[in-house]
Amino acid sequence: MRSESYWLDTAPDFTGAQDGAVEGQADVVVVGGGFTGLAAARALALKGASVVVL
Image 1: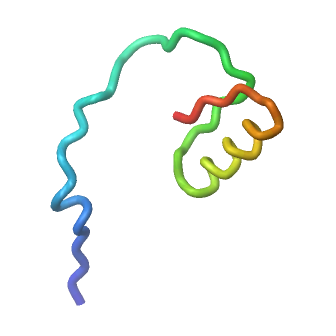
Image 2 (image 1 turned 180 degrees about the vertical axis):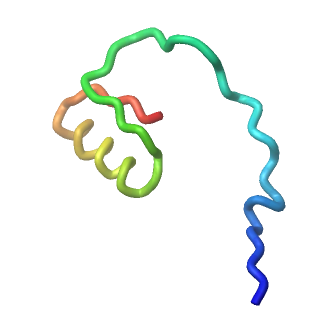
């Protein structure tokens, strides 16, 4: 059985990364934008927290 990734084969190269410090403040930083990370960020934002997702 051969496994291939359509996304890896077709996605454009990401060139939007930036180095250095990010200005601003947040109550919470969520590392990871997968299902769980985004769900946590949303729940915190709905409770009034300032949230940044990395």
